[in-house]
Length: 150
Length: 482
Image (cartoon, rainbow over all chains, first blue to last red; front, side, top):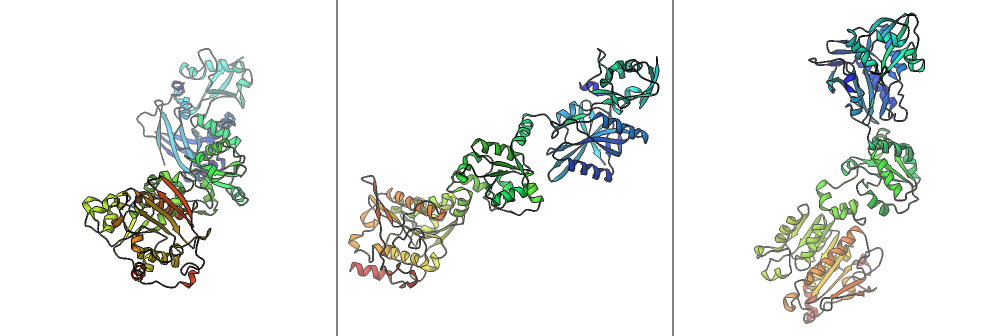
């Protein structure tokens, strides 16, 4: 399946994700509030020359209620709404964020299997103590490479 | 009838649409409109059989076309058709995740406040984290049983299966597996501390930083730690204990070696003598190479090579009325392995006055005896040495080893029985030989237990508050022989 998902190529670019402090705080608050369940949403912004600039973020419903602690399946209705909001401001959906409750912020095999090239995948590791780390990843030749988080 | 529709392209597919974020095409149905797309883009959306791929959704306005008429859904002028990539992920699906989810559903969760309430109402908190984690802090009163031996230890620690248990780890996951194990053992009310000790700390609930054995001690005393009668607290107690060996000879040698091996923290040794080759037949603290050296030095070398963590205090001196109290009062217990009557009376009198248990042993050829003189013992009133022997026997009735000889192995047996009694008393476990004397006849290979009665009129132990004072013990014993 992965060959169909790999469309964009970030070859030769050192990717970076720019997340303003206010959005980082908002994201951490959303993730903490959702613990112990996995929370997910969309990153809105601009892409230019390997740098992704996040200008807004939206939380989405997790349709996977049965496995909400370790799975997410983003509600397409929320995708549509976020897509519209982005277009209204001349932005686009630049990536997906989701939390890993009690797990490190590294993409799982499942994350990799379901990922789309061309998007940033921002993962937030969260425990009862709060947010442990944020790391961002991008698909490149079927493997995730880490983006510099700015 | 054809209509113009705007197809919205998601970011991941835009490279296949020439970078465009939307494309204006014509068609009567959704399917027809899609056919207007480039093949490279189209094949990402439809399978070769013409079905919508399962990781893509098509939305006409706000509606998923799958809920309308699928690809045959008619379009009207100005409609917006969105290609919505399925966005999913999450942690790797593992059996343990499914198991944890099941355990979460089965085992009631309590928050730290509820756990504290339950503990006050009689529930037991069980900390199943690793020793190094527990060492950094654990709820007050929690049993630090750990995970690996939990099932082996819990029934000794909490015999009542009806008693409520609250299991905790760092975040509340390992404790779920532990809780499952406890339920299988028959504990009816087992709960899981949600969020674990981290949450306990975060909520500001008091905890203690327990004193723990280090990794080295944990390894050395591993066989003690698995015994409920010793365990970590018992081992710490032994490490804190101070035992004085009177004599590093036939009895003191085995007792000293085993007490050191068992982890008695401080071993004092009183002996003024030097190692003689004739000692080596039984005095296993010493070696041929150390003949001629002071016994306290030789003993220290032997003990430290067995267990370097023991503090060995050598007293190369002869005990007398002037130094006995200063010397004995620094110890919790005395193991008497002396070979002469003046010392036995002196040690007895000082132990009675100071309230220290005096583990006593004596050997003669194939016979030996061991008892504990400890009038201050709280659970049973036994005699002191003077209750049994108000005055020393004449020398011909009590020959020394040098005169009578002794089977080399015999003091090994008696010295080790003394060591066992010492450890029992230090751990406050079992029934000590207070008011009882164990007599061993090696030729018959039999043990006999004799009951010892105290003398209510004993000048020394009847009323420890009225201690008659130390005497000249050499003269006292010499008189008896006269």
